[in-house]
Length: 520
Image (tube, rainbow, N blue to C red; front, top):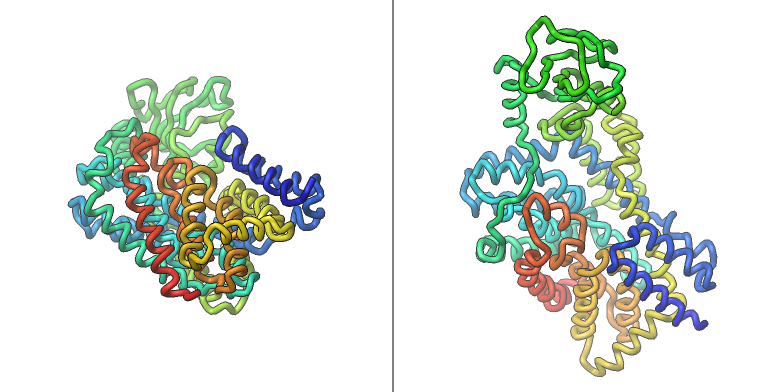
């Protein structure tokens, strides 16, 4: 079979698999690489080259940096400091949250910033008497706009920057993306503030994240603990656990104030049914609840064994909500050093990211185990698996064929119309499959179009990045959209109501504004 036809068939199968949502994204991506090799489109090295690509390594390293920022409480501290000074009015809150989210996204990616700020925004909304549905979609959409403020905002920026350099252009500067990102952030926030209350549902979700202060208050009441007793600090915290059937702890005599058999934790309280037990204690039975005090690391280690206790709220989850925890200063220093390396270009981006991740592990801010868990392997494998398809599009002439077809359709319309077509394809495809996969598929076509028209590839690549960030119409378009769906009580169709006017903004910026900054 002709390599071009084979490549298009593999692409069609991948799109169908992505849209069906029945096959894991990582399996689809790996399947694409294998299919390209088995059909002879690419040799073995080219088919698997994505798994050693510097872009993939940089993306993986950024997940470790993001984990450090969240787990040390830097994100929680920043959010509390900004939001505490805003008051409880809806518009100032939305503006502050949007600006904070956009700035944070530029450093730790869309998914990282939304995951970090989601519990905080829900708590703030509850205290301000605002429905979470009025604030959580703006949180996600502000993150999408903020992803274009710096190179580290999204994997798309890294991918497109590398492609521009490899195809007659140059790498985009670390903050160069902000030339397109700032209008998007301003426009997004303006639309949210002016029309958000009418375009967003006013709905109460079925469940919501826990307010840390309310949780502490409830635990003091449930376990008869003095109001003066601090339950959570930078170095220590508490964990509520339940004794499961067949636990080795059944029959152990416990009482408030005793240390656990390991000597690492202290029993603050014991509860059986609806009653907190007094100082005389009791022999543990299945179903008894304990409130344990200790260092965050000890709590996490001792509550991980489900055959002994079942933890109600994981200590690691609670620890993230404590502002400026252990390791925060080290994390800030390492983060600043990484940004300086990226901004100055002293070393390649992948090296800067790997140095930062390695430093966080060596300084014990993040353990090796947590570093592995922090990496979104689905994202890493998706990018690594789809890079060979992008390569196949170029090497087999598929991209050139599509570009020639588009150019012949466009006639003498000019590069602005070509950019508009590329942006429209990206906007439509990006709502159905991963925006990362979309950019990897469309980028070779955009490059071939620029080459055929003998114009600069730079505006095509930046416009593609802008369009790739506009995954706004469905909850499945990006993980960030999906994260806010349940806490916000959203339905599938809710996203399009606010997403459509924002997509018009992205289209205008990509097609009309970008070529002014990066001329053809």
